[in-house]
Length: 282
Length: 282
Image 1 (tube, rainbow over the protein chains, first blue to last red):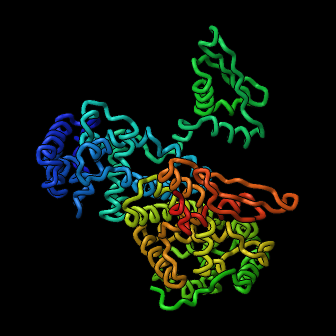
Image 2: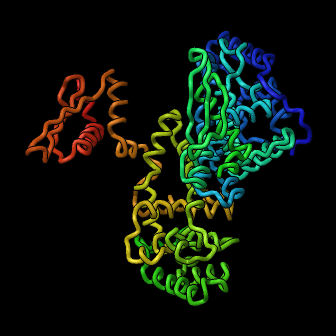
Image 3: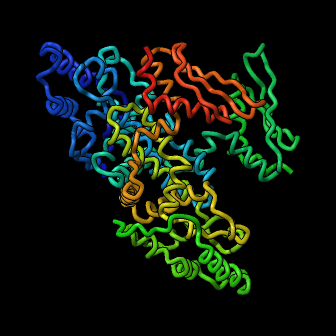
């Protein structure tokens, strides 16, 4: 288990990324496209420079048989293109990690939500596993600081897509090197510490309301009133804003102003669910 | 490992299904909707009547902590509706098993096809895991013989969709009861015995050609000739049949007659790939 909560909250460390780039790419070029540098040496350099063992791996009792998988999990294709060595980037590990995560989340949904059918579980899974939630977990773990990129990316912010990839690629590396059960217990630990820090329950059905309140509301109105919710919108200020009204069974339930029809209808559905406005309908 | 290849090749055993239905539903009704029958007793009856332990589970060294999960993996919703007991059907287990299978297959693709990128791996996964392949594995294992259905289904053939579900639902039950690594080693055994019996390699890139030869051919012609394949079709016998011609780079490559445009164009693409007809193009 994590003993401390000192994980770097976000962003990559320019110090590591720059230093590693200089020590590898620049030197490889001098050495004649790096023919004399072995994958083993570069992996050692990655471990030394990034300090990943103590900063991240030790906190989850992770000791890899093949350390090069760890480096690979953090290697962006932009670095591979410049290094001109036989490096591999993280994409294939991420592809595998995605399926490991899918199976882990599905198991937890299966065990935690006994009353939901598979259609509801599937929707809840989409609400729980998406770019927002995965990039938050990457930020929580401070994974972006280990990212290895090409020169053009060295000073860039690590975008959400890449942060999401990193969460899945290191997971894929763990599952390849240590097996699925170890990957699952790593995820258990990550989620337990995330919940402790954030005070938020990860496997929380409420997230379905946040993620897709319109579908949720539709299910409720169909079940309770055998009708669909109706959203009436009216453009205001020459289309700069919209007045959005929610009707159920012909009855006006709520009204708001938004500068986007899409966001506004989502908001009004969420408000209706959270404030139990359906209970007031005769 | 399997010692024999005597697994029942296909179909459910009407003897078991009828007998189990009679012993449960009919008796439950006499007992007043089964209030006096426990889940434990019904599970024992399922094990006794189906002989699933020796016919199937023992062959893969499977001993469940919770036998009711095994029964649930074979319980179709049509039985649940009639039994009026607190039974659960297999759908949620199947939903979980699907994700376990996805992660297993992805790992094997990752390890076996080092040169494929994640897009190619994703296509190959679709070619390997689909209703045809899963229902074949169910038939190979003889799983349909353990299916528990309602009265209206007792004398029906078990359709492909249900056979596909059964492969995933028992896998889900194994992973819930025994963990992911055990589920993966079960799959390893299933595939090894399937390969031995059928003489066919399961993780075989050739299946991509069989599954989607038109996409595969398009990739090849784009890579080699920077053009798309062209399918010219002509209706024959008042639209009863079609003459299909394949042109690449304006050159006629092959020609066939089919009674379906869809099947015919797939066939001609497959023929072109399998007989290396592209090599003959100047």
